[in-house]
Amino acid sequence: MSEVSAGTTYRRGDVVLVPMDFTDRSGSKVRPAAVVSCAEYNEGPDLLIASITSNREPLPHPGDHRIRQWKAAGLLKPSLAQTKLATVEAPMIRRKLGELAAEDLTAEDLTAFEDGFREALGL
Image 1 (tube, helix red, strand yellow):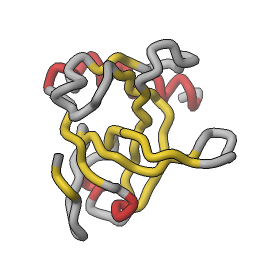
Image 2 (spheres, one colour; image 1 turned 30 degrees about the vertical axis):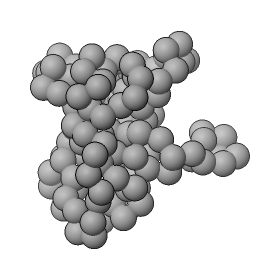
Image 3 (cartoon, helix red, strand yellow; image 1 turned 180 degrees about the vertical axis):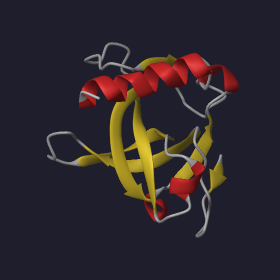
């Protein structure tokens, strides 16, 4: 696990530890998340991230999928990448845990993830 310094560049597929608000805004918790924004977007001050949960039975959302190589991604437990997005400033990232393996970034997985966003947004 690497500590993140100022000016760190993130890439799509990076798994990071970041404070995330609860969806009801009652508080927040430091949680893992996957960077989902493209390289061009990541050149700015913000990142788009998708939440990651170790809850094996969460309320399903279109596009959610199990992270098969969760240990390689730096996660402590089997986990699920969710189509629950947030925008955060890069300095909010506590540290990089790892990266999603190629197996978890296949065209099929990314298409399902992106299709989940389209379905949620009615696009």
